[in-house]
Length: 340
Image (tube, rainbow, N blue to C red; front, side, top):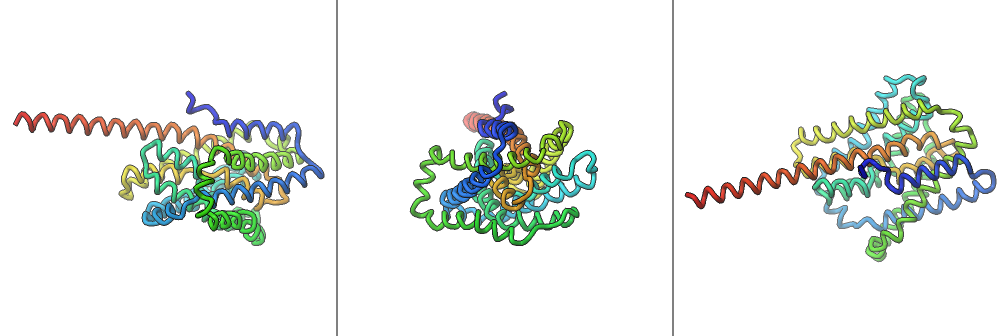
């Protein structure tokens, strides 16, 4: 049953939302808290850049077919599915602001840590997962704001100023590049201090969530949406994840990928990054109430963790059964040879 329980970070997210609901930051305090949050986000992406080994990137690029499938799924199939959902489900069932959150979710990059962890548990191609998930986040700094503008234009919600791309580069990409430049000197040390630096990763996300929901609560977030609205988003997230999992799993088999590559495509192609998504929302939708926009992403985060935990274990169990079958077949073959 532990696989179905929320992880520590998810419980912290829930606690942050509850805190923001009852004790929202506002006024001058919100201004200074926003400055601290921007600094924390910059530090987060600096650490991402410093952790990523260039050897991993170079080695992973050799498996270009796998990476291309994952990128097309992450930035192509996901948005198309959400656009189709918008045509099927009326606004009276799924409020526009929550659908905006789903649109934003659909163009986010894949996760890094959980994609790699589940690929490892399931017995997939871990080096390819490391490269693909990392590449997804790098490309996402450019593709996510571009796709947001395109999708919102298609959906009749208006685009955004191209200044947003410049803000993304300054606040997210510049620290990442700085980390990459310093990676040869500080990369090993940062990777060795993963537990010590983890509060920076999670703390920066919690700060953005607290700031976003504080602003949304002040504007009347919980008076705008009902329990039915939230339940609708949960169901939409579940359908979206299930559809993408089926596409990646059976599609990779149809394309002739090995079982290890199938696992990598399934887990890397079906994820959406909360760690990248919340800071990006803070930049792309600056000046707007982003609480409703990041809410679908927060719900999707927990759903994907619970679902993929079960799926990874099933892959691992299937691998053990195949190995046991091979061992038995080898033993019988040896006995037959000795008898002969």
